[in-house]
Length: 450
Image (cartoon, rainbow, N blue to C red; front, side, top):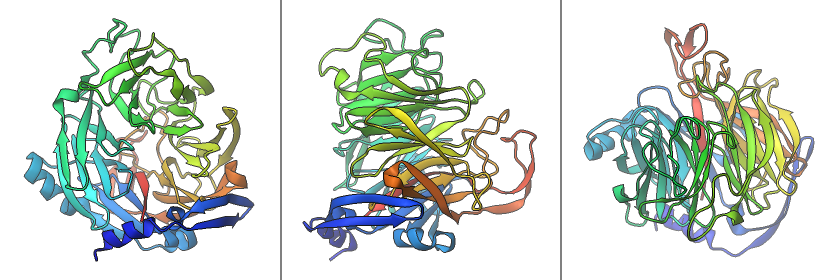
């Protein structure tokens, strides 16, 4: 019996248990959970440095108990995925950037931001099985919950694309008939999709998919937002928002209590600092037809022109009362109460573990004890404005955040360090062009459950 087969059988065991997690400074999640929540897990993190990047895989139990001394499995992506990409696409991938998972966690989805490659990796065997080049830039590629599609934000191509997926047979096909050209399209209301006044720069940043697998929220580099029906061919706009309503550079997408939480962030020359959080009601989008502009209007929870909001996660994972949003510039986490749509807490991650952690993308463990967060490096390769150094971090690696007081607060309790030391070099992406010897820059991670 294969390892993957064994893991799938274990998931079906219908056991109900009660979990009480006691953490330093508070009590974690309490309640009844299914056996699926008692599965083992791993933390997969990607370091953007090097040509194709590095993949680090940590045992979940080690990350909970001894993260600072955890020994990951390390994969050089030049060796793991580049030969497959050259064979299947004719070109080599550059700058591993974003990680995603399908719903059953059988496949990792790795997107490359300096090229257009999207790579599918079997998690049980850690084997790449497909590589698709979508064009200019695959900034992010995320799977629909029903495992029918992967939606791709082709950033500098200003294309929103769809890959049809069959994970059982490892069949993945870029469906060019589904593509929406965000630079040249016209909205159903008759407005240009990209327009100097409405939406000045329609480079898509992240696809945010709702639990029905139909609605896809597409954040934009220059501000504004589209909500698409991702199941139509081509994909169709059901709602449009302008840059006066939704600010630039969002990437967070968390669904909770019938709402989708979206953020706006900084990190570009045009918009170096931004920290906004919005709640969009999921009931407001038609099955047929489309909405007038900026309808339904989002609830604005936070509107700030300082900081740099990027990653986020729902905590605890089972009930979803709170959403945590990381600010990689100010080294804090904002806590949103999804019942009231209020900002209820802000806690700092600066501590004896790191004076400048620069938290980025996040995920939560199956037990609701900890959140794991990618920590940026001293020479960030993406998302940094040298004018403010919003994404510069001092301790690249994976941070472990204890979930405290039911998710209303937390604490950085450990860091699993990641390092890629080199001969001294000039870092051109940081203000002042400092001379450094550390290239590691951890941007994305996911929790893979077995």
